[in-house]
Amino acid sequence: MRKRVIITCLASLAFALGAMAQTRAVRVESPLVTEKDFVWYTEQKEAWRALTQKDPQNEEAWRNYYTAARYMGWYNQNDTTARQAIREMREAIPDTYTYNYCAYRASVLGHGLETDGDKYAEAALTMLPAEMQFFDYEDWVCYLAMKGHEERMAQMAKRYFDSGIFSETVLRYNYNELAGMDEGGIIIANGDMAVIPKWLIQEGMGAHRDKTVVCAPFLAVQEYREWLFKKLGIELPVWESGSYDDYEHRLLQTIIDHCGNRVYFSATTPPKLMEPWKEHLYNEGLTLKYSPKAYDNMAVKRRNVEQRYMLEYLLVSFRPDWTSGQRLSANYAVLLADLLPYYAKHDQKRYDWLMRLLVSGVTNTSFDEEEKQQYLNLLLNK
Image (cartoon, rainbow, N blue to C red; front, side):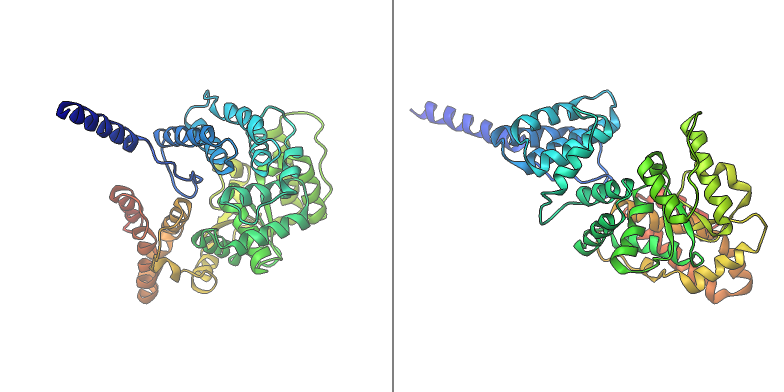
C-alpha cells in the first residue's frame, strides 16, 4: 500500500509539473505597443489555440490565436498558420464581430480565403463591441480613411482618442510635429505612429484641424486619392501606364507643385520616399519643409523648440509606455542635437535646458544601456 501511495504521489507531481510548464495565454499586443520575438508568438499561438479547442465559442481566444499567428509571419513569411486560423475560425464563429474583423485583416495581409475584404469590414462595423482594443481602432480608422469616408473616420478617430488607450507619448510627439508647421500646412507621413495620432489630435482634441495629413501608403488606393485631391482642390493625375512608384512620384510632385512651401514631410518618413526632393527639404525640428529657395531653417528650428514644442513631458516617465513611444522620445536626441552647439555658444541657460530634456528623453526609456549610450553619444558629439 505504501508503495502504491508513493507511485500515485509521483504521478500527481509529474502531472502538476507538466501543467505548470504549459505556457500561460497572454493577450497578444501589437509590436508597436510591446516587442516580442518569434518564440513568444509561437508559444502564444499554441496556448490560445488550445483554448479555442476547449471552447470553440471563445472569441477572445480566436482573436489572440489569429493575432499571434499573424505576427509569427513577420519572422517567417512562409508560415501559413494565420491562414489556418482563419479557416478554423470561419467554421467555429462565422457570424461574429471577431471573425469578420480577423477576416478583413487577413484579406489585407493576403492571409484571407477571399480577396474582397470590404464586405468583412462593413459587416464588422455593424457590430462593433462596446470596448475595443488597439488593433480594432487602428484598423477601422485606417479603413475608413482609405475609403475616403471622412465623416465616419472622424467619428472613429474621436472614439479612439476618447478611449484613452492610445499612447500619450506618441500623441505628444505628433502634436509637436503639427505645432511646428505653418497654418494650412500639409504633412506627408508614413506609418501608424506618424499618421493615426495626428488624426486623433485633430478629431479628438479639435486641434490643428487646419493641417492636412497625407498618408503616403494610402495613395495606392483610388478612393483615398480621389478624396485627398478633392480636399486639396487639385486635379488628380490619371494613372495610364508605368509602375506604381512612378505614379506615386507624380502624385506627390503634383501636391508639391500646387502647395509649394506648405508641404512638410515627417522626419520619420523613409528617406527613399523623400529622395526626389531632398535638395529642397529643410529640417525645422521634427519635420522637413519643402522650399524651392534656401532660408534660415535653423532659426525656425530654434523657434519651434523655444516657443512651439511642448517638451517638458520628456523629464518624467510615470508608467511604462509603448515601445514606439519610447523610440519617438529618444528620437528628439537625433533630430535636435544639432542645436546644442549654437546654444552652448550663445545661450548657456537654454543649452542646459535642452540638454536635460534630450538626455531625459533617452534615459527614461527601457532600452538597454548600450542602445541608450548610442543616443547619448549624439548629444555629446561622439
